[in-house]
Image 1: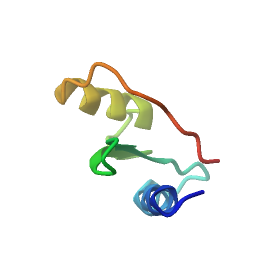
Image 2 (image 1 turned 90 degrees about the vertical axis):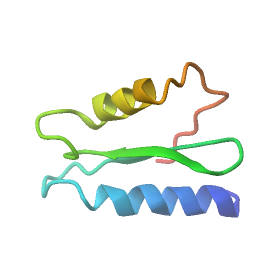
Image 3 (image 1 turned 180 degrees about the vertical axis):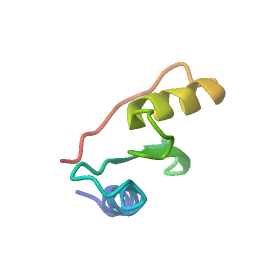
Image 4 (image 1 turned 120 degrees about the horizontal axis):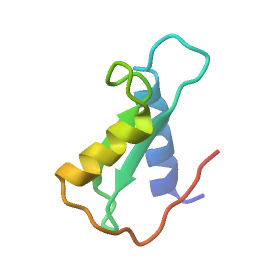
Length: 74
């Protein structure tokens, strides 16, 4: 894992700490190919809305129509 990947992984972990006090904590970041934050989302950010729906809403608002790649950091 390179330094940029580690930075964004830690960033997503930190935003997940804003999630409700449930056992499931999810934080996700969308980063440009130039290593710039586009948007982020986390579980509990919006009441009764999944983190995935929050992220998709932000993607729609930003009019992002495609992505080059997606990396899962479990």
